[in-house]
Image 1: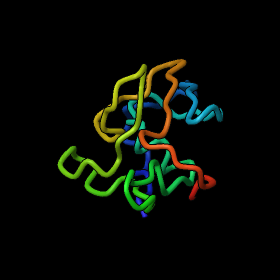
Image 2 (image 1 turned 135 degrees about the horizontal axis):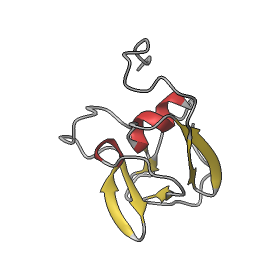
Image 3 (image 1 turned 30 degrees about the horizontal axis):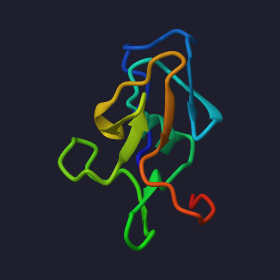
Length: 102
């Protein structure tokens, strides 16, 4: 669904930023949002709704829909509006008892 564009010259090096999502390690090139990095890694669901437990993931990628909510440093933020930084620890915003939906 969201395929990366060909190299536009913004990041021609091999630098990678490392971060975790629910304790699992991931990496991406600099300039990615949390949402774009996790989509590129193959994750489709970043949270489950608190009432029904239905999976939700990035939808609009511009901060309008709030479907990509995650927790960073104890604060609930939009994954599509949060840049990945080295060592960032990201968690699901609404954890449920069910297994991760990918």
